[in-house]
Amino acid sequence: MSALYIMRYLGEHDTGSGTVYIGKGRIVGVDETDVRYHGSYEVASGRLKGTVELSTPTPGATLVTGHLLSPDQSVTIEVDWPENFESADALFVKVAGEPVSVTLEKVGDTP
Image (cartoon, rainbow, N blue to C red; front, side):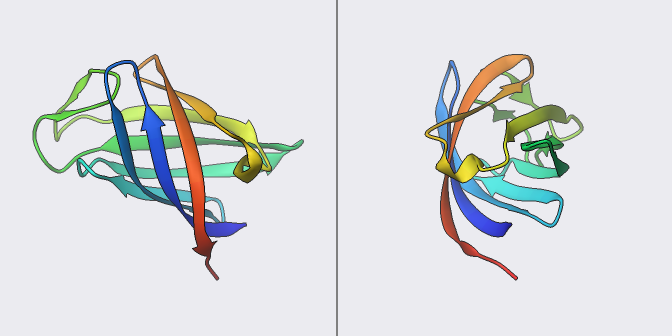
């Protein structure tokens, strides 16, 4: 499993979108507000489990949870999805303690 995805997400205060690569134990992406995603995962017992750090190089990025993210700050997201997450209608994570719904649409496989 190594692919590029269109990512769409919905939080309590806003919606957003971006692109994310998931493969070879890595999760890397960027969204429309220039928030960066860098993390890793493992697959075990039918689950994809990992940790992703959100950060931004620009000041004042507001997350869909309503939290303001400054350039010297990062937020950790814990990922716990089914291994076959591509078939899920929606996936869920917590960002700064708040629930966020995520959908992923596969753009294509990568080597």
